Length: 269
Length: 273
Ligand SMILES: Nc1ncnc2c1ncn2[C@@H]1O[C@H](COP(=O)(O)OP(=O)(O)OP(=O)(O)O)[C@@H](O)[C@H]1O
Ligand SMILES: [Mg+2]
Image (cartoon, rainbow over all chains, first blue to last red; front, side):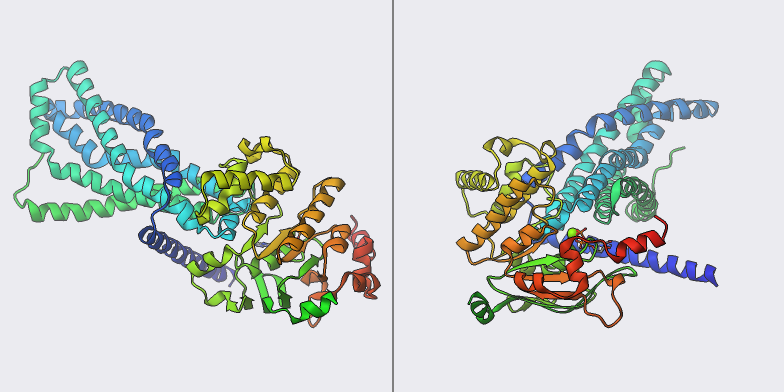
């Protein structure tokens, strides 16, 4: 009986949480549409998300490009297809790894910091103080962070893509000594503008999810240092899960769109 | 005389049958309170009895589980978010732990309500900030400091300056003198009285300091924590003037104002602490 009660509570709690989160998103969107935040709240967030995240995104991008070259070279070589490497590496980067990596780094670097900052503000009554002075906390704190993530994650993704492509090129051409002409010729055949679009399109959803999840965790932070720590960790974990779910569902939907647009298609092999 | 005048005043805040509950914990039960415009009401009660929660419900920061809060004839529950934001420009709230924005300097903190309104030039704002800071006994040099660089008492006074800067109609002071030295406490008491003399403000002051209570109060209300009350007892165990408080026969009230542990000590002994 106890067990049943506990399961029941768990179900009710999770439904409440989903409802709460949805309301939080709706409120953010409503404030976003009614009044734009002032510059002084906007620029620090843009700086934090766009400028300060660039190095780490660029670094991971480069390494993933090289790792892809190392990994796929071995297998493609057994089939005698090493010249196709360019296609594989660049396609994977632009469609999947670039956006997902940029989003993961953003969730880890910015998302958890946002949750910790807003959580501390909640615990020390700064959020109450905002309301008490007639400033809406969602408008003042959440909307600027949301806009920063929404607008800047595509640029971070482009950075990850670019550095990844450069890393892959460097490793394939200079270390594995694949013919540069074939490498890029194959890339050109297999990677279309649609792939680039898919990557950037997904990244916009990733960015929004990261901002919403992290701010929500911060706003609902429980008291104490432990509460803030927990908010910051769950901001990352929940963002990451959201990224994976969005990635899968958008992947399916966009593939379907692709077949509608280009019924003949181009295969990799 | 003053009482007679106040009686005629319009009520600014009316609290009807207010219940507040967090999860399973009941904090306020059936509170009825009417605060006439211009009154200075001191809220007493032991730690954890719900004074802060009551003040926050009056300005709509805490949602009541049941009951109504009416501010200037408007029921807070019926107002849209936007209207509430607008209404809040008429309040000032001094938080118990100051609640300064730690990403901003002291000056930006104090100027926040002014900037929120956006009616003043930078120079005007700066002048007003400096004069408010000097009123609470802070030197000009703190303007560019971050709240983290100040002492607890200084932070509290910055919070006070921030709440007063708009000359609000109603000010809530949550323990404005706790953690201040006796001299600074008296400066703050004087400030509360002076603010009131200058504008016809309505104030609610939460304090544990009987000096402050006697000095600033027109009326004193004392709350009792719910766990210490029976089912039918009212949570407000005293409501009257400071003189009436001193002469009150209720043992719980007397123990509180004289600072006697009384049966609480026996309880602690019984639990073996
Ligand atoms: N946001 C909240 N969530 C859950 N419980 C809360 C919350 N705020 C207050 N409480 C509970 O309500 C009770 C009353 O709290 P409140 O802060 O009003 O006490 P207080 O009378 O101001 O005490 P003090 O004099 O120590 O400041 C406490 O038991 C506290 O645990
Ligand atoms: Mg309190």
